[in-house]
Structure formats: structure tokens, C-alpha cells
Length: 383
Image 1 (spheres, rainbow, N blue to C red):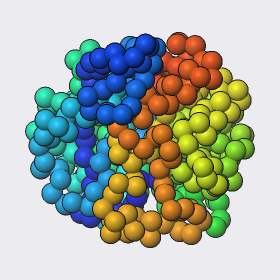
Image 2 (image 1 turned 60 degrees about the horizontal axis):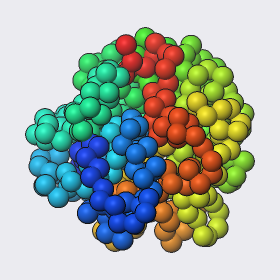
Image 3 (image 1 turned 135 degrees about the vertical axis):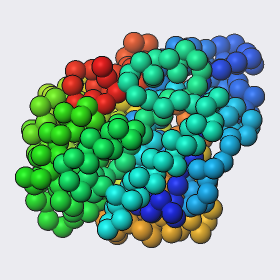
């Protein structure tokens, strides 16, 4: 999800994340954080998050319409909050499109990479996978620059241009039709076009990760079939559990896994469950489904929200966000799910996976150890 406002109207804050997880014991086997009053976590959960390379496969780190936020310097409190989250890698991307898509994309990359430079004490940009590993060691946030559309690729050569400028992942479509394929809320699903096939080939050549999270069913399957190597569904859920146009069929999940791809499970409420209550346990149901369907190696986290979630947005901006989507998105009163709507949400999900009997190795893999997919020459963050 994460909105489709132009860069001039809607921007995202990139936070600093590390493993500075000092956790005084407050009762037997239970730990609390100074930045998280009232929340306690088991020692196993705390140790797992501390030891794991935690990557959020879709992470707009602050949802705001403030035009000048790219000039912001993080406060000590903001930096501490992000460090306490336990997340190391953030795929920083949001939706854009329309006649000014290319200019929006250039502005987005310039603004947020400048922001990274001004706040280099708290995060680093990702060029290759080694940057993620280094960020974990250095207790800082690694930012994978992405865009949730590919309309900025006005010609084939633009793929190489944007890779040089720092883009490492791009969705083929957002929710609408473009020259490449069909978006998830389009009435007609035309699949991937000839131009789209050429863009996929060039993205693989340039080692840029192909993402099909917002594509329609046929466009998703076409893209997986056309790609020579693994691609990603960075943030979606299983249609076997919830009937929504933005989530994926079992056929798509199986095809993705057969090519070595990885799917991130999102905590957006209407993508998790059609009725309330909707909580972190229901999100874990989608992880269970994908793991049972294609194996644990093909599932991760793609929260599709900032650390505080959508429901903490300024009311006017919250209303504008909801109003920018078609009715098929079926918003309810809340967008976030219970237990995955605060900066320590990764710990809550980890506790749920522990309760479900997953091993430490499997939990570590789901937290991010297997994203980006390990096999493909198409991946801009792999060497």
C-alpha cells in the first residue's frame, strides 16, 4: 500500500536502526525496553532479533506529506526509537506515477539519498548485500532504495540510469495500468506487455530486483515466467486466507518459489483478514500458509507501514491517504493490525512465531536472512 502521493505531497522518513537492544530483566525470562514502557518480551525473542539480520521488505519509514522532510536531521529520540525496533534493513519505497513519474522518481532518489548523507551516523545506503551485513555489525540502518512502480522507465535505457542513481528495486506496476502491465485494481488484466518483457530483461541485466507486489494475477504470473532468475513479492498476503485484489493466489506463490523468489507478508489490516479482530496472530497465519505451501525459504516480512503504522497519521493526511485508493481496497476504520502497530512490532511477531513452534533458524530466516533471494543475477544488492 503506502500511498501514491507525488513526492511533493507525500514523503517518507528514513530512520536509523541497529541492535542496541539493552534489555533489563523485569521478571523471569521477560525483558523490557526503556523505549517501550509496558511491553515485555521473552529472552529468546530478544536474542533472536539481536542475532538476526532483520529486513523489512517494504518499509516506508515515516508516512507524512511534509514537503521538506528530506532536510530533517533525526533527533536523538528518533534515532533511539529506530534502534530499539531491532530492524536492520529497510526497503524504502512508495507508490508514484502519472505524467511526472520520472521527475518524481529523480526527486525521490535525490532527496532521500541526501537525507541519508545528512544522517550518516544512523544509517547507510545499500549497494550490495555486504552493506546489509556491515550495517548489522555497525548497529545502523541499511536502506534499500526502491519505487513502487516502473512508470519512470520511459525507455529501456532508463533502467541503467536509475540504477546508477541508486535504485535497487522497482515494482512493475502500482495499482493501475501502465506500459509494462496491469495493476491490482484494474478491471482488465492484460498481463505483461512486450515493453514490459524488455524492461524485466533489462532490470535483470542491470541487477535491479523486480517486484510484483501490486500487479494483477496474470501480470504477476507473466513476470515470474519471463524473468530468468528470482524476483520478489515484497509485500502481500495469501488470497487463500483473504479475498482481496492486492493479495496473491497460491498459483502465484508457487511460481515465485519455483524461481527462487521470496514473499514478504504485510500487516495491512484488510490484506490480513476481512473481519475484526485482526491481530499479529492472523498475520502469522499468512506466514504459516506460505511456509506450508512452498517452504520456509520463501517467506519473510514486508510490513508496508512505518514504525508507528498508518493509524497514527495526522487525521487530515490519514483521510487523504484512504481517499486516494479505489473502493476495492475496502478500508476499515483501522489500517494497522493489533500487535503490529508500534516500533517494537518485530518482537511481537517473533513471539508469535515462537508460540507456533518455529525453530530459531527458521525464525531468523523469516526475519530477513533470506531476503533478497540468494540465487539471482538480477538482484541489485547481490554480488
